Amino acid sequence: MPPVHSLAAILVAIIWGLSFVVIKLGVGAMPPLLLCALRFFFAAVPAVFFVPRPKASPWNVVAYGFFLGIAQFGLLFAAIAFGMPASLASLVMQAQVFFTILFAALVMNERPGLHQIAGGLMGFCGLIVIAMPRLSGSGAGPFLMTVTAAAAWGVANIVSKRAGRVDMLGYIVWASLVAPLPLLGLSLLLDGPAQVASALTAMSLGTWGAVAYLAYPTTVFAFGVWAYLLSRHPAATVTPFALLVPVAGILGSALVLGEAMQPVEAVGGAVILAGLALNVFGGRMLARPKAL
Image 1 (spheres, rainbow, N blue to C red):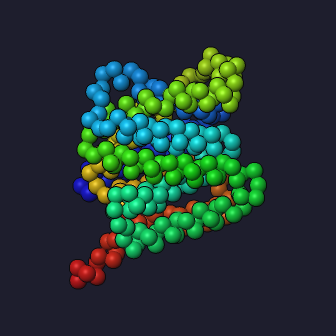
Image 2: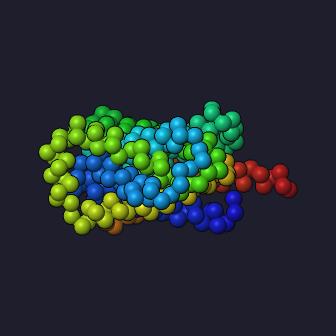
Image 3: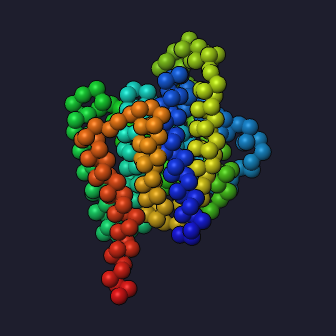
């Protein structure tokens, strides 16, 4: 991958890592699905009136909007609102790397290397370490929701990859149009019209700032760049850059939210990061003896 593409992937990872802190602050001020609906509404409007519709199948655009906006972020926002720490969520969501590589192998015949398989198994073991103490308590629901959100992200990655080389800004903007109404409907159903109306009329400057950060740098810019990279490089090359997302998420959560990871979470997180690192560097290490 060219250096400029690598730098772009690193910037995206940092933006996404800090977005977990913003989500945590945002869901403290309004219902999670309403916040998510506003995120994608402003990612789509007014840009959708000026950005041409992408030259991709309408069903592909709708599928991407569903898996990204409703399945991935609807579940993630709700999980964080229900108690999933932002730092831990930023880490567990990186299971999307392993889901993406798995789905790419099943759907697009992108065969993973031995180091990618080993990295995936290592990451799965890390998730089990984190899950064990949570599955017996109140943290089970948020944890499982976060893992499911990571799987939805993996599906969204494959959907965008199947769209091919299209205008990614238009692709993200028009796909964002899919999510707001279903998310608003779910929020009205689960939270009630009175709570939704109260949250909308009482939005502070900080909440508007959270919506703006989640809509523009996090969604329009970062996912546009990510989808662009996936359309031009193998999924196994692009997705491991998400290794930096939990680094930014954990540091941001510690500095802004004062979150600290429990020892078992730190151990599980280290195993996941080791699996991600194996995906990034394992191929080069195996190729080096052949070059000799």
